[in-house]
Length: 399
Image (cartoon, rainbow, N blue to C red; front, side, top):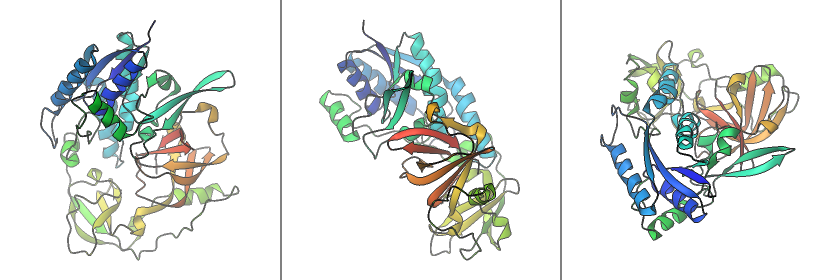
């Protein structure tokens, strides 16, 4: 008897080709489209963009000759993704809604809908791969980077569990984007040349301050410029040794305290919680040779700290910290023990090249110290650590 796979048809080219690949592999395939958002406040594209997605998803299902279903998951999406996003921004942190959407919706609420339709698996168009291995007597699922380095989306799945991976299939993970578009064109999918979606997962491309002002109040505050000549801590390249003390680790992961530096007020903003570290847009202050970038935010005092130029030392840090309760191991069989240290390759944002780092697990959490200084470490984002092409674990950056 054929295994049934419910494929998440988003109206894009990747999910359509994923469904076609599964048909070729002998699965019984059905398509499921989910609507997750109704409010159009702050959207930078047409109010009916989701209706366009739905139309293309239906066209794909019709072309492939598979049953098509629709589900509205806007309520769990609002509670588990958008409300979390607002809460994090209010605290002066920068969440990643795409990571949360995968953990809380695509491989949870959506997967439950797939099971109701009799699905043995749920499939998506993610550019990543899954591999089944044995760890002793136990079956373990490895999450691997996609074959196409420029499209690898494993980072967005850094919070999924073994149970979620067991139910998931990633049919285009061994393909490049060029190959996917060629297949789509060859089989006559209307999505073959359709542009990739942008912006917040299932919301779309938004003007973030306008979107956030649905819940967060605008509040004028000072912009303080910190000179590059301020006495920032100097860090040498390289990884610490085994005998590093916890006090030294704490110092390495501590954010810059811009209130200690002699800065000057150069303008005003409408809310420190609307900005994130490394941001360039929205500062709106001229008269500089190089653009200004956000180097820090103080939401309690509503101060925005900025520095001139991409290489401003206030943008760079040696390490970051993840609290114990925010550490997630995809490979629980490889989880570190308290007091242990290990070298991994780490990224702190999507598409960032992997960075050499050393992880130290201590009583209060994980210290991640990098070989080279890292630009734009932002609390609320996810740090994900890899061994080779396998994503081992991740955690929310606390500081």
